[in-house]
Length: 393
Image (cartoon, rainbow, N blue to C red; front, side, top):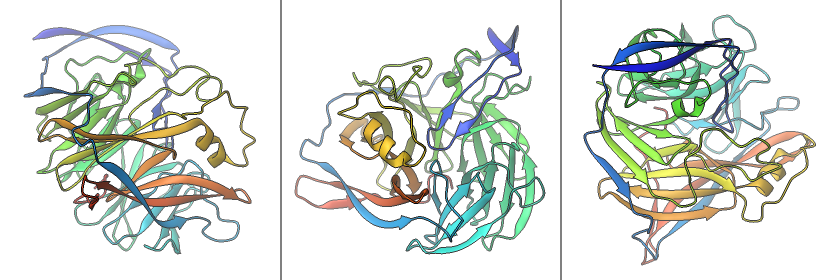
């Protein structure tokens, strides 16, 4: 056993902003202590070469639909991250109204779920929506630090207080995996918490050696996605490292990508992305049914220049002028980089091979374009990205 130093703190504020997928931290008191923990190491660690193996390949984006205003006076938030279920319905969590809006596969508004409040089926800051194996819907409320569970017909089932402020979440088999910065003595230092159906912590893990330092909150921040056979992916935001774990806490694989344009960092640069270029960071991973990992990394726009403060009327134009997205495809079975390509849009995964991009707003109402991703090979054939489930199911 090894003595592992950790730093705990009081008065910390940790919040996930949906569009940025970022973790912020404010510290008022820092206390030092020690715990005992076992150093972990992956069963296999590989470094992916920087040269793509498919020189003649390209990524294709096909526009599918638009998600926009639900009804007169009912608007979406420009930071909304959409989700999709197995029926092809789209879900837009909207913190400004404390509701979740539902759209069909064509983008037609169907209904709203919940309202602002703290009671059963109510939300203060709904930020993430996940779907379990039996199509139950799980809504993560960041402000309430709570998970609300609904039937596929949107009937309220139960609500559970979560043991951490959530940065990201995914299902792995029958368990939900949370990423956050828990200050509990039992959980501190481990970025991954395994939660059962009743909201109880089954186990914690996810770090080589448990350590948490409030001065380095992004060292605890992970983007999560399901994999096969009840395993899941855990991607660092502040360095190009993607790990595969199982629900027993076994570290199966570590993938490190050698990319000259992605240098490890401790904190997001002050003034970015308006005064200085934004820092590259991983905001999403998704596995397709061909055994490939798709990775989204926002970077500075190719023509980035200092940008004035937003007028608050057209965030889409701001994002377009400040951000591009690098999409990378990694064949984790062959341990090689298939393709790396920069696109103009600021993209986020929706699920099942789909991504969203915030588009120009009409009369203050954000709208989102939904695009399908595909890989065009050397012969011109397009293999459309398909996953076995949405990224949070």
